[in-house]
Picture 1 (cartoon, rainbow, N blue to C red):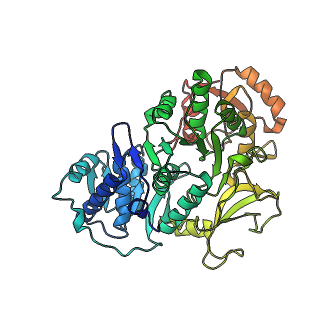
Picture 2 (cartoon, rainbow, N blue to C red):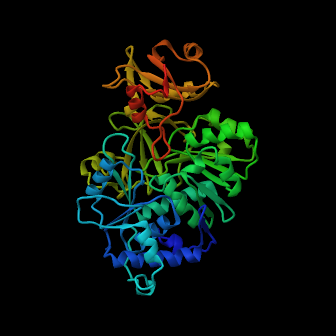
Picture 3 (cartoon, rainbow, N blue to C red):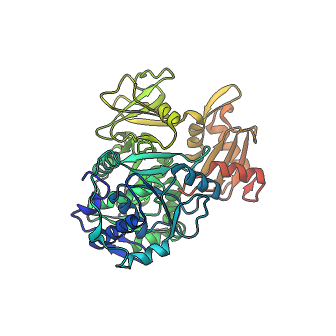
Length: 498
């Protein structure tokens, strides 16, 4: 398999794609995807054009995505909850030929816009959609197939450009590590606009597994019901979801069919992994690290967790990782520095951002061979003598306090390992707030928490202000929204308790 649409056209499995109200087998998915490709041709979508897809996770979204690949266009999946200013910026940036969305999508450009309901109507119409007339295309492994916009947590959204060969390499490498098979059902609650959610579509098709597409309503108190009722065996999770699952299991003591939980997006503390192993001894936990610019860097095998509990694993097979200092020189094993990734998983760069692409995706680094590209991640790591990677935070997640340079991740991890703390997030000093603030979700009072902090942290690492919070704001991708957390504090909302 060379191309994304090959996952559908050449699959020998019996995958089912399911939602609460709908179910489609592989043959019907093929038929509807080909019809959708004809639909895109009818609207004059040509090779290299962008198709902006702004609909909720659904079987229809999967069909549009795969059809976009068939007509050699580029899929741009945007979360329907994207704010208007960001959406307008994205439309201006990627200049799509066609927009398919849940409803109206106002824009000032001469772009054809189709609602999801119109698309569904056309899909039933033999007059418009005859896959027999589908044009043939000459494909290349190097065709651009995806623009994945980052969440925009730092400035304007930027799109990572992915080609067929990069996506397919990642799908195959991840599949080898996770050992997914045709008896598995993947339960996805993550938005397809998030690459972690999107790749569940590819992994299901490649391995012949079923994919159950859940909704945000399944992510709260209904989570156990979702996992049990749908007989989910693989649950791609983020710490926010995993913590919720643990709380539910501790209360309800239910037995699940889950065989595997994967984690990425943010670090999953080893104390949480231990709780999962206690509550579900049969369930394997895969701690993973990656970023959109190279999809997946490493996966920690469950069998390695006991001996390397703080690691995020070794680099994917067929890739290489280096740790470099500020002069871009490789440092000795065990020493901290910036992580550099080299391999077929490294994407093409950023759409319409040549300067940033040249800064992060480098062709002229000394350790490269042939036409390889080195991705300078901006993340601080060290590598041990066995080749395992350890994450220490981002270069831009360090700050000075009382004359000491401190790591946000180190402080957060220490506090999150306190039994009485459910979640802790540290905000460093900003222009708006000239002091470090620790937000803690806990049942204990602040006097108790402050006392524990004095036991666990050196005096210069203790945050200048500690606040309790009832609920953390989250992004569309399920990560804690640090920017909104600051705004919540500045607005003086009741959610925050002094």
